[in-house]
Length: 257
Image 1 (cartoon, rainbow, N blue to C red):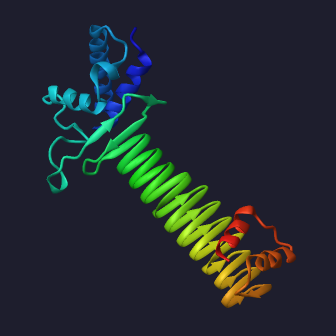
Image 2: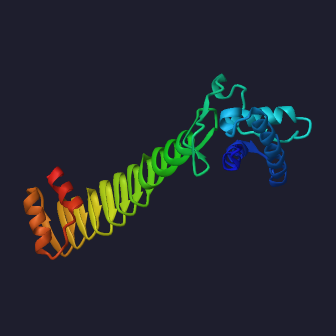
Image 3: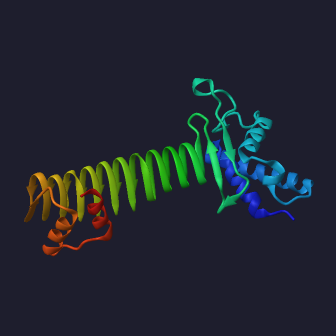
C-alpha cells in the first residue's frame, strides 16, 4: 500500500535540495509527485525511500532528465568538485521525524544540512553540528540554540558557552552575557556574575560591580568583601546581605574558591 505521508516527506526533502523560484518549485513538486507515485506503484512497495533511495540523488537525476525544461534550475549540491577540488559527501537517512530526515550529513562546499541530527558547514536540526549551527542543541563556530550552545560565538535561550556567549539563564566564556548567571573573562548578568570583570546584582571577580561586590583589585557596590576568601565565607556574606543563593551559583563558587 502506497504511503502518501511518506511520499510527501520524500518530496519535501528532495525539493529542499533544489534552488528555484516558487512557480518552478510548485511545477517540479507536481511532476515529482506524479513520477514518484508511478515508480512506487510499479515497484509493488509503499515507501519511496526504499524504492528511490536518497532524495537528494533523486532530485539531481530528476532535473538531469528534464534539463531542457528546467534550464535555470539547479540542485544546491553538485557532483562536481568544489573548493580545493573536493566534491564532498552527503548522507540523508531514510528514517524521518516530522518530515525531517533523522540524520543529514553534508560536507559539500557551502552545503546545508537539515535534520534531527544535522552535521556540516551550515547545520539546522535538533542536534546541529557545523560551522554555523542552529538547533535545540548546537555546536559550531557560530552556535544558536534553544537549550545549549557551544561555539566560538554562541547564543541560547537557556545556556551558552564559547568565546562570546549570550544566554538567558547561564553563559560562560571569554565574554559572557546572561540575564541570570554569567561566568567568564568578562561576565555581565542581572543576578550573578563571576569573572575577571564582573557586573551583576552579586558580582565576584578581579573588578566587581554590583549590589554585593566581592573583589580582588577593585569593587563597587553597596556591600563589599575583599578576596581572597573561602567559599563558605563568600556564600555566608552574600546570604547575610539578604541575597538569594541559587544552587548553580553556590556550586560554581565552591568549585572556584
